[in-house]
Length: 120
Image (tube, rainbow, N blue to C red; front, side, top):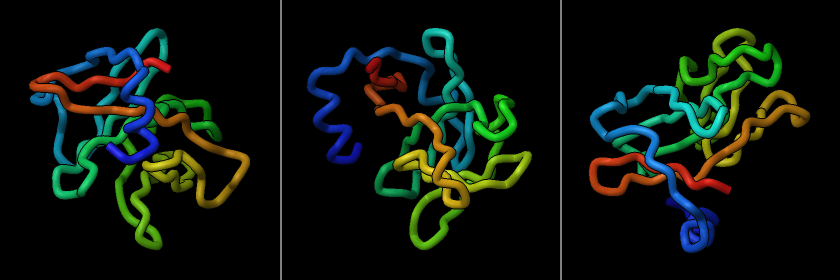
């Protein structure tokens, strides 16, 4: 969890969305949270192992971000949207190619066997 998430963690309501065994290493899975699809990315070899971003691609409108390819550009972890290949930061949700586009980012954590998202 990064420092900005640490501040949120103290006052947030956390909701369990899946179990650790539901995650796929170095890939995405999609969970449902209060009417929204959230893409979870599990990167066990990174300092921060879990990332949670909106599953809806802002350019195409399709719910496909969880199927995107994970990589790094300029040292920043990114996910490439499957249809138009734009790159989104897993940390901030910003789009590298188009500053008008961004994905919502949720604080996420593992607590025991549960994966939890902060309800903001």
